[in-house]
Figure (spheres, rainbow, N blue to C red):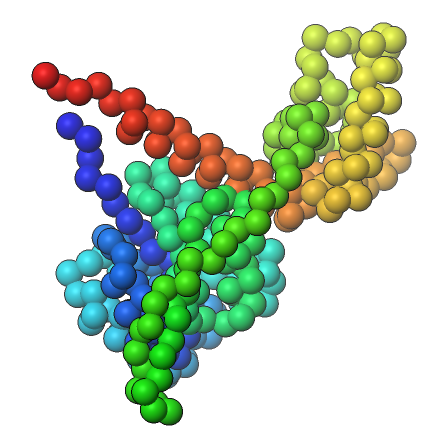
Length: 248
């Protein structure tokens, strides 16, 4: 029997819990992950907002996770790690940016672009200066990101934690080639072209060490590849669900 569909909402916290509460209620929800920042434990308004959300969703699983405040790329990576765990556990993830800091909203949008995770916000309506009402939900559109060339994707996949030379990368990509052969030299020339493109695009960082070129994924490269992995996991899960044989 197929498991019931589960929904997890990532919620960067701010000072306006009503916006978050009312907008979350417009969707199925089983789990809420509140995203806070270091130092928020001393912010009275933030703690009050957290209590309001927990009270409004009493009986639901509500978890608090601390993520980076200042670095957009770092907070994007941390959100992707959280999402990946939720997707692997079988949940459909949505990100609510009705509250929270603007820079976290930017991180959330980056995360949505690379992973195809739905991102939404509230459409507010005020009958007076202080009384909030939810007018509707803004389903934020995602613009297509052009995939990298197949060869460049292979490089990022095989880089893992990095290599100390182009030759090390060749050995990972084509272990059948022997160093010193013409084919190995040709592969070195071919890879140099793709390495330059990836470096110019900001997906990798290179460093000259003696006569070798050390290569590692940049934070942007890690974000891109992690987003692709979440896309793969989500598509795989959807495929499995649509191909479950009927029980007669």
